Length: 187
Image (cartoon, rainbow, N blue to C red):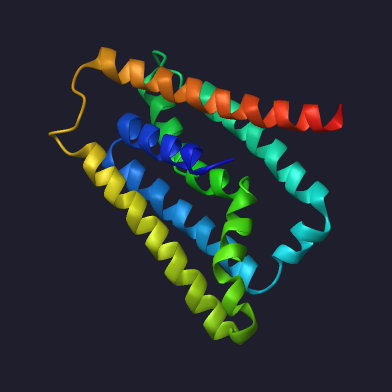
């Protein structure tokens, strides 16, 4: 998986649910990224390195999540009650898309590895994780603010529907790529 699914989920939630839904999604995404940073600095990522099946399991789970998100993102006519429920649950997709992306751990391991031996104590670990999570959340909140700005807002329902379909197709293609990678490694 890559940063593409996160951006797709956050943009989709912003365009379909508005600025507040996009901001909540960004905050939960930042929480998940901070959690992975904490995992790395406390050396939990060694489990991923030692047990490769965990990474594969997370990637396959991520592909399943992307398929589900693609189906949820596909525009359809629905009742207002159903739409409200979708908006409330869609913000959790920001956290789920992070949790199913073990490459974030590898990314942080590469960034933090030069200083991992020098970072000791839960205060330092927690401070580093909070900093990373806040930076991630702020970045995606800026994306949400630009995407929800009236200058960039798509007022035509047809274009909203087209973008929703495009986001669904992108997420489905990324999921397909992950599945093909794992099937070809088994064969």
